[in-house]
Image 1 (cartoon, rainbow, N blue to C red):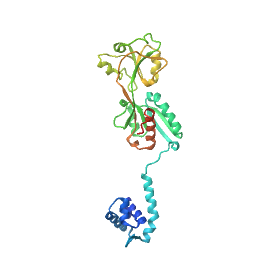
Image 2 (image 1 turned 180 degrees about the horizontal axis):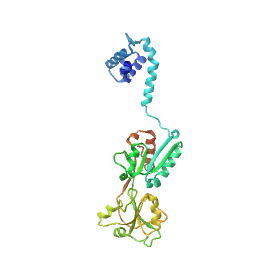
Image 3 (image 1 turned 90 degrees about the horizontal axis):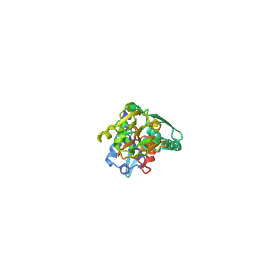
Image 4 (image 1 turned 180 degrees about the vertical axis):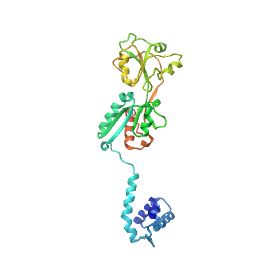
Length: 302
């Protein structure tokens, strides 16, 4: 065991190149170290293997029979180590396994159809699980590797995780196409006082993300209805008298009319989020790249 404990990769590389070159200066130049450093490593090798390994001659070194007996094994070890640390080529067409995506219902409607089409086309053997976002459990799901990638809004995800902004989204104020005031030009005051529906995936309450915006203009919204999912919102708006603020990528909708108004609501980001351990994971990197390319075809970063 003492021999193994005293042996490291640098020494094996020195031995490997000495067995090829039979010359200290050539090995030093090839490895980018001094001749003294090569000689020092050779001394350690002699102690480890209890053999002279090389005998000096006028123009170089002659390997001992024992050193020659090590040559193939050392070469194989060096090759395996180089293979271990070499960049891994990723081929989506041959990848398999299971990849889990956690997504808001907004992302499930807007992002996933195109993303899943790309994954099925380019990685047909990959199995994909999509699960609803669980805001209160998101950290646990990422930390335990139950979720590989999150498609969400920044406010839903702890800031400690790596993220990438896919695009910036805007809200549009909508109403049923059959509403008597669908063609009306609305003021901010009229919008604030009109019965409103909000989408509240975080908490079941009558508090909306745009409340602060209206409050900054001295207005209070007349929120009368809340649903947890964007998927339910359009039908509820179409079948009632309420108005609502919907993300622009969920529109147009055949049953809804965008109000004629000037609100200038704050924008919000749509992001991908992953765990730090997956920064360099080939599959995770590749899928993130596919998502990015949906909204920025020139973006090659992951």
